[in-house]
Image (cartoon, rainbow, N blue to C red):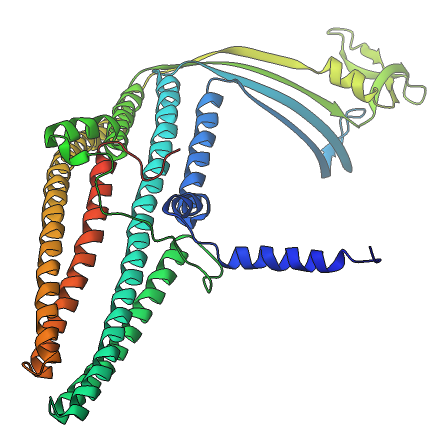
Length: 478
């Protein structure tokens, strides 16, 4: 083998991979999974779940003691008393103080416990909200996916109609040359061909827009080569229409996320009432405080006799007027004690318990209770409304699905009749027993019947998906 003979193989493999990537067609499951993983709204909702987890940490922290430390250093500049002479002098003194405080809730009307329970419920509600968002995105993607399939098949129908008319134009030219039909019929068919081209352009634009809409739902950066598989069949794979509407409704009540959200919000509202009521109860807190200080001024370490003024008169003896004196002393100063010595000698501690009993607070606590009760009633009504909406939606979806199936079956029957009618009209036209206008009318009715079959097909598929969704069958299998 020649040197570097492997290089063409590498380029061939790379070209093959690129072609494969460009020819990739997305399935419905791939679209839904990709949308759930990359949709911006879902990412934002997931961040709400993280906030709920942080709120739980806050609620748990309420059970822990609060510890705060403080320290300060101050300079006092100006007229200060000299501790050695007792005289006021202009001087600068420095002080350092430090302390720590510990507090703990002993009883707080069960507010901390209820706050923690509410935080846990909020996490559940956030998770349900995320699930609901994923379900909504899945339904939107399924709808957009089916719209792409509809537009693809509609484009095929329009192209097929154009091919038929092109063949008809060739046949008409032969009939005109043979004198079987008038030349005016040939012009009618040419006008029909021009109309077919316009319909193809409109179908192509509709297909492009539907692909763009689906690609945007998937948050794709490029959709130039984006395409989906077209193997969706219009049939009830899970036989969901064999179920009774009542059974579907009961199944939906067990699994519908919107009901779970409403139920969780009701439980959260109940905890809010309990928290508000807890503010009317006495609270008991324990506390402990430690503090100390350090001074940087000189201190008195002793005294010595005052040689300059040994004594000072303090009075006279009554009757003799003898002077009574006392010795005078001078203070001996020294440097301040060491920092940690002073810190140890000057330390102080305080501990105890504080009971707080709410007596009157401007009706704020009772008003909060009333607000919480109003919110609770609203949550009850919202849950009841969700049940009513679910029942109505399930029965409506079931009726719509059955109606869509019957409409699709009727459209197929109508298409078969229109096809036979068109074939009969074409045979008559070929022998000169029908003009081009009547033939075009038959062909227009056939095209409308084909479009109706497509429309009813994908309308039926989507409504079956919705009904399966209520029954607990996901859009995609995990």
